Image 1 (cartoon, rainbow, N blue to C red):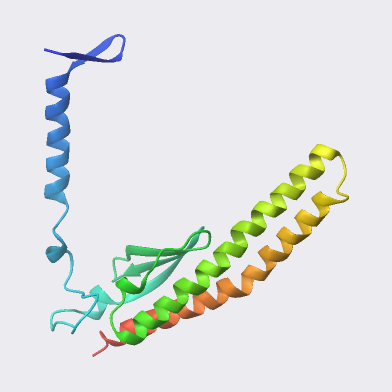
Image 2 (image 1 turned 135 degrees about the vertical axis):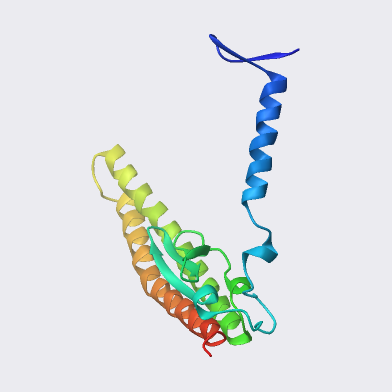
Amino acid sequence: MAVVSLVPALRIPARLRRSATLAILLAAGIAVPSRAQLSTCPAAGPVPPDASYSRCALSIVPAWNGLLLARGASAERLGNLAFFWPHPIARLVTGDSARESAGHAFVTRRRAAVLTDLGGLLLLAGVAGAARRGDIAGTPRALAVAGAAMFAASIPLHFAADGWMSRAVWWHNTAYSR
């Protein structure tokens, strides 16, 4: 029987470790309902009669790194339109208008994220260069100014993406308001 040493004083047989791992995975599998059990809230197609507004409507939840898309009264987290590297959200909404607005939100946020990320890197490079040289003249200043300008230019795009996301949520929620 093989023995795994986690800590010199603690030795756990490999068979026991495998059994414990399988038990944990099995428990997790039982505790997580299947996709069909999770919700009757479709991402596409007609809305079933048992889909309720309190269970299927979406909301926007602010987070440190973007806007989260949450579903229902329980605010189940579905996706994040992140500030630094956004994720597509169109698959999470119901209806053509909602998907179109969500697509605009993603594209706009992706453009804003590129400006934010590159601007932050240039600003950081300028500050680091100035610290290394002992002054801000020349290239460090140019990098810092370009980075700050790119970062500032990204702000209106982030707000535009927020507006598109809000519109996507509004369109999605109209399917559940009866």
